Length: 503
Ligand code: GLU
Image: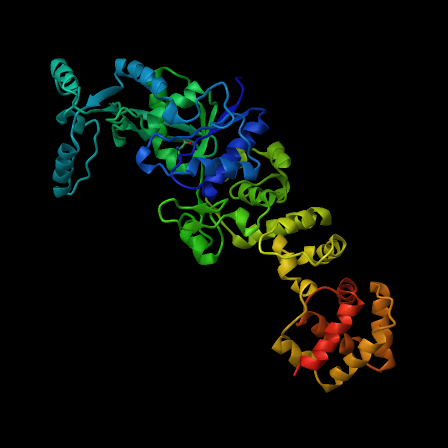
């Protein structure tokens, strides 16, 4: 068998969404599992929908995810160019071949003429399609004489090239994920293959490129399933062997019916794009997973499991493990429901698995965080205490803010629960006692214990107000650990501050 070659073929019409990332990931996982190649091809023949910066965005997003193409516009390769807009001569060459067959014809109908026919159909409650019936009464190279066609061409009349859909053929279509289905060609229309500016449409360019680039497997979204019959026939018309196909189901909304949309992301507070994207027209910025603080490993692991179950229902897998396990036959036919909590769970799992030193590097790079006043040694201690409780790297800072700043306010509920006149007295006395403490977590625990005992109090009666003094509320890791990181001076200062300021 020839070497497996799989392509991801996005159109640069905007940022990649989660579905696009999943398609790219499955393309990549399958190719690598088979010891094959993964190719990025930019399908930019639709100039009207072209969005500035989208191609760069796609490349950067794939890089962030660790999905590195073997061939692409950026990396080059033996089958380039990898941008369709640069492959016009290749399409022109194959169009000559196609026009010699009985599978294509020239259509000279103007948009106005087509509108007129469409309106006529609508008046009768019917939907117009350019197909095996209507083509016979429209203005094309099937209905007008050769001389007339030549005359129109000489005059420079605009035309498109259409596919001549065979009449009443039943096509049997194979899909690796969905199995066999069939379609009758009478339900399909005569799609435009080349537009009047000479640019091929998606269908023609896509089939030509998959052939020219020796693509063996086409893995793409289910929105392309209705085009599969046409693609089969295009391969037949060109006399080419066709690749195998697999169509991926939708990623569904977190709740209710339908496809996951940006609106769902806005409503439930999660991004639907891998990276921030600034719309070049409106200037609006859509949120990305990277900027939200997701680790790329966690992000792709989450995306991979939207529609695929590895053996033994394993959930946490590295990219290498995913490559080893990936199997298109185990990709689900049904849509995969997106779950924000699950996405966060993946991130916390990956964060927990990192060493404190790795987290420190990430924390230093995180935005909006001031660490200047803390030494690396202190930060490492804070990380080891807070890592388990954090979902995102920045949580170590925001949830552990009391390590960096003394409380200026005390939570009302906590004050009610932990503070009274007796607590003021206990804390004042305890702060004096602390002057002699050696300030190690184990001895500190003993110190608190001994102090409580000497006062005839339960541990809680000392621990709770003490926590309130240090943290400002009744949360956080063990109090002796907090005290040890803050140091003796700061601990005593915070107790004094609380004694003077809590009402
Ligand atoms: N350019 C198409 C898209 O963006 C590619 C579909 C395919 O993979 O064939 O969806």
